[in-house]
Length: 236
Image 1 (tube, rainbow, N blue to C red):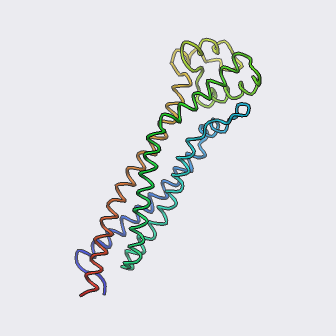
Image 2: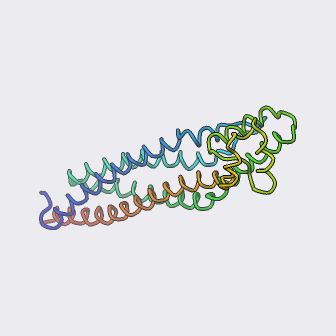
Image 3: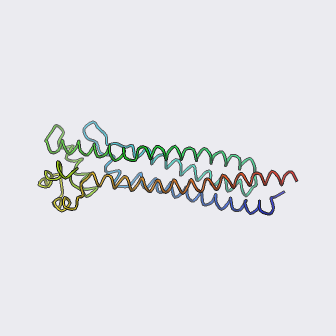
């Protein structure tokens, strides 16, 4: 016997929310793949300075986002099917998956909040080390120059700070572009550009996480109400 009245409305409302949840999972998966293969981040985070690899902590968050998007699509489909079939078993499984996914998202959000400044800091330290080697002519200077030029060309910047790094590269065409003097006056040093690059992408991830969390809370409430309605209708 199918559900009737308000419970039936909740059934279709849950279906709609799950469909939105499924779409959101697809969007998050697409955004995560775009962030993973974005030319700016890949150009920088694939660099290698001697035996030292560029910090790739940022990719940890991206891989978590990819996994979350894929799981969301599966859970959304499970919720849609369970709502239409009025199956307590499927809805119970769906609710359990939602709780687990919500817990993982909270954990990922805490990780992102803790590491949001550290990600940019590690990349800036890597750049500074390469810049120092390139300017001082230390061992493996050619590799350091290649790393520095990749940063400058990718981010359209020059130097790490106004006092110690910008004036020197201004006259070095092998490190900075010829319009680097203009970059200096516009204060587009690479530290600032690195902060803008990662803060913007992490901000995008944070917005997606908040939207998904709100949808998940509504779905958990609706699934509990629908399960209770199905149970009551089966009794009568």
